[in-house]
Every structure is written in C-alpha cells, then in structure tokens.
Length: 239
Length: 265
Image (cartoon, rainbow over all chains, first blue to last red; front, side, top):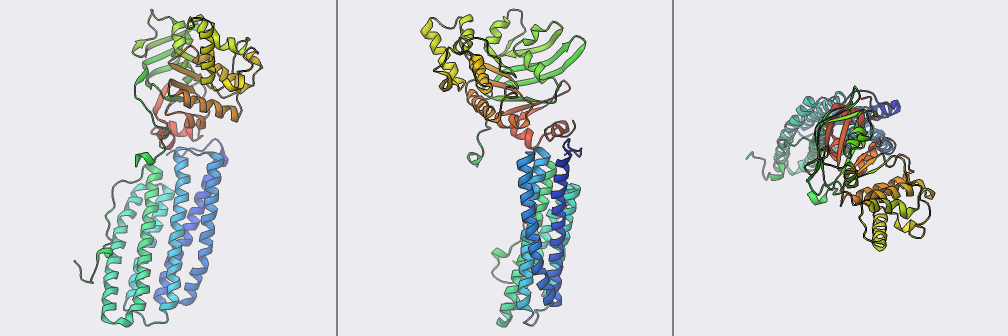
C-alpha cells in the first residue's frame, strides 16, 4: 500500500473520516466489554443498565459507516488499496456491532444473575476472559490503524487462549450443575455469557483477518488452531 | 466454487497473437519506449493504461506500423503477429493494417455515404467479387458494429451526418469490414457521451469472441469494465501486466497502485 496522498484531497479526507469512525466505534465497544464484565463481577445493576443504553450509539455508528462506505463506492469508485480500505471498514464495523450486541446481552443477563447467589469465582473468571478479549480488540484496532500485520497475526493466535478459557468454564459449569440442580439457572446464564465472550474473540479475529487482507491483498489462508472443543463434550472430565 | 464466481472476466484462450520483445521506439533522439516485452492474447481485450506521455499510444501504433508515417520515428526490437515479424521487409504495411484494424479517438468517417465508408476497405483489398457480395460484407460489418438497425434505411446518407456515438460505431464497422484479426482502439470513447460509451463497450465485449482487441484508455473504470488483461505503462516502461481483476484489486507494483488509485505516480 502506498501512503501518498490522492490528487483529489477530498478522497483522502473521506477515507480518513470513515476510519476515524471505526476507531471511535472501537473505543465504545471496548468500554462496553469492560463495563459489562465489571458490572457482572461487582453485581452492579446501574452499570449494566448503562452498558445496555450505550449500545444504541454503537449501532448508529455502524449505520453511519455503512452509509459513508456506500457513498465512497458510488462517488470515488475506489480501486486496489483504497477499495480494500472501504471493504475493510464495512466488514469491521459489522464485527464491532456484533461484539457490542454480545456485551449488551451480558449486561441483560446481569439483572437475572444479581437476584441469585453468586456461583464460585465464575464472575471473576469471566471478567478475566473479557479483559483478554478486550485487549485483543484493542490490539486488532491498533494493528488496523498502523497497518501492522505482525500484531494482527498475534491477535489471531491469542484467540486460541480465549477458546481454552471457554473450554475450562464450560466444564466448570457442567460440574456445578451436576452437583446441585439449583445452580442450573445461574450456570445457564453464565454459560451464555462465556459463549458470548468466546464469540467476541471470533469477531476480533475477523478484524485481524481484515488487517491482513487490507495490507497484503490476500485473506490469511493458514488455518488458525481451533480450540473450542465444547461441541464434543459430554462430561466435565477432560478427554 | 469456480462456477459461482463472476465469469465475465474469464479469458477463453491463451493463444498469443502479438508478441513484443525488447521493443524500443525513438522519436529522433528521444526514447519514447524503453524496452518492452509483452505477449498479447487472442480473443481477449487488453487495456493499455498510464499517464499521458507514458508511451501507450506509441506502442499501440507500433502494432500496425502507423509509426512508419512519422519520419523521425525509429523502432527496434521484435514485434511478431502470429509468429511473423511485422517489421520484416517483405511485409506490406497496407496488408498488415487490413489485418490489424484501428479505431481512433475522434470518430473520423470519410466524407462519403455510410455504405461507402464501410465498402471502401473491402473494395481496395479486393474482398468482394460483385455488388451483391459487397452488400453482404457491408451489412455484416454494420451488424458487427451494432449500428445496422439504426442506419439500414439510410445507407446512402453521409456518414458525417450521424451522431458522435453512431459515427464511432460506423468507424468500428469500417475497421472490421476488412476481416481484421486484431482491433486497435486509441481512446475510442473519449469523445462520446455515457450512453454511446456503454454501447461501444458492449460492442467491444462482443468483438472479443472473434478478435484480439487492444484498447488505450484514460478511463480507469473503462479499462476495468471492458478488459481481461491490463498493461500499465509509465515513462516508456511496461510496469505491470496481468489479469485486469488482479491489477485493480491487488496490484503488485506501487507505481501501478499510485496511478489507479489517483495518487501522484
């Protein structure tokens, strides 16, 4: 990719503006992840309600980015690196919007969970997992704005760690539910939260993929190691 | 999965029509083309793009020896058509130009009737045995130029009375009337409105089933729309040559990228 300016300077301004929206959206989504997880650990209903209400701003930014992307395609007919930039903002804004939805869903489940007794240590485990994903998101956005494919590759690898955390929690919840059926309601919600965070990691990985596509013109072909084994698990014991 | 993809850009054959090896062109002391190697395929639209003065038109004009008409112009290296050296002494440039037709930037019909515009080439090359034969050739060429329906009732009217877009299609019909194998087009749409441009582009796509078409264009979007192969020229060099879809999504040379994305090259 070349960093030279376009002859039409308005084109540069448009591309910069739409990427600035992505960074702003990313900031809102990072805060939503951290706050949803903190509200869960501290059993803070007000903070959870706040996360839910802030999702609208994220959705609005996605709509704005979509509109601006469409306008750039119609008016500028972007090619090569410019075209990949436009495609990447469209895709990344979609990923960010989904991550925002998962954070909102975590905040929703919070209001059920605060009415029950906490399940041993699981809230802080989930928070650690959420922090790991938030850091991956931050790095993927840094990689995006600095066009750093090494950092993007690093994010892709770290998604494996999130998958491992999810596997462990899946087992843990199964154990708790088998021990005492009264744990089932809480553990069901906690499991959905863990799954939400695991899915966030997949969307972050997709952002990292976009960085690689944007810089190299090719999607990463090398398959990432997949570590989510829960679809094959029948009992809490490790195979 | 392949059949799910956009097939329009697919190249049907990989037979080489034109081949250039170490081609240099000089205008007096000035070197306009600085050593070009290229293979141009049959039944394919190849677009030449590049900034003004990059040598793309000069190179195009080498392919039917139009540069012969310029006294100070000198061409070195090899250019072959179907393996035959077109600069060989035994090659008659007039015969060559019947095989390698050309359409220019501005529609330039002869100040004659529509019929005579098209009939002129076949007549001088002796392609028609009699009047009925000539009528057939003219109709076929006008149909191939996608203008027959519009002019069939007024073949004796002057060609210069047609609209710009119609004139250009008449010129294309005139170029194909001698049954050429290659069609060279030097900015064929730059004087046309968008509708006429779309008609000519549609025509180019149809012509590709029979000819090798080489088009010089300043419109990047036109190159992207009509061609299967794109060659990017810069300062007398052929910088990059490849599949059009590849050049416009992921060019390998930063100069190509700068040019097609509208940055200073």
